[in-house]
Length: 501
Image 1: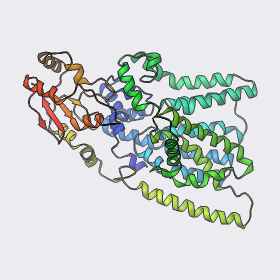
Image 2: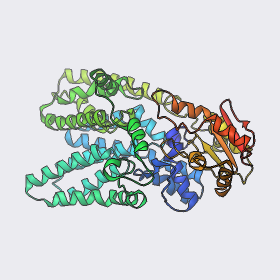
Image 3: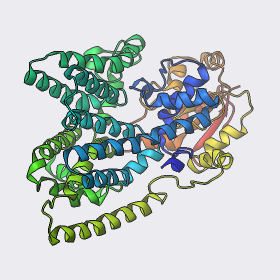
Image 4: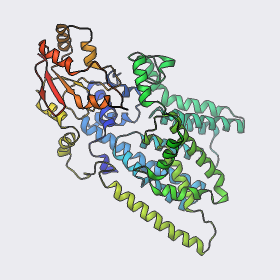
């Protein structure tokens, strides 16, 4: 995981916003609203680790790798908390198996070597489970202090990703209310609320200042927002909103989470059902199973069902798997027979998971590759035309990119936008004469226009996000004829570069 995290990222989402957003903050010297990249207005606490790395080493590319290593460290930290929780509920064997089950799951490896935020999100869910069970081993902590701790952790989860409002804040606020009612001390609820607010309020406040909407780009129908409109909100909702409820799809999702997913581990399906065999921890196993079921159902009902969004289920499943590994409580020859069989199951599962993680199917695996070579070879592997653009333009060039937003590896200053933001070329050209368009291009300091027709057509393909109909080959042909742009040069099969006259 650590070696993989030290490699340049190859994931589209990462080079579009997870590391691109911090890069832009670093280059401008401040954390500012980016109207061209809607994703950077979401809670960005984990991305701050990349920005921290960039500031410390004074290099946006190396600093992103520093951030990736810090993100990867959430995996072993989560495994420790998972093992500690399994030990408190069950036994030492349950602790070791739970930690191993979690840490050797290909999903966890993949989230550690790519700068996604689901790995840290799993850590916060593991920490929340650990926190609400922490008083059972060595005395009950002060209730108010415990409420504050759980609130901080729930707020920390939401400061990573909006869906944690449902997966962390709401269920553990219910825990705070139940705990307060049980001991008749409502300070627990107040402490929980303050804990969430301390971590999450700055992100909400930043969005209010930037857009007028605390949860921008969500909640547009409730709060409205600057830089957003009903058409963009409908486009966003179609891509990221809940999917239709169908029994067949539900069954397919259950099977995927149980083991058919490419990066899931067979350990969970093998051991989780056995967690209820021992009477002494059946109640706590039922609580964990209920919470896991809640996470699955809310993921399936309220999100667009992207597979990595259900990963917060894994800490709870890992603890249940650990408990299931020690289901045979009586000391007899049957227990030792089970231990032998468990060793075979775990050995085969961990070995196959490790082999799978070593392949490119789980992530870039040039663990000992030279960073200088990888800095140039990885972008060429991802998008050769974009590399040609970056290497062939003069040092003082400032291109406008149309249709392309995976731009982290570019060294030139650029102007771009994501597919959900207002298309920049449309804002420049709509309603203007050719002369006015040329003047606007010069006012913005744009020297070239790069059009990635492959990406434009991909977005316009059935079932994809869609792309503004304003952008057409005729638009650029007219700008060439009118003398605004020079005739294009081809950088790829479907990529064109125009120079501004």
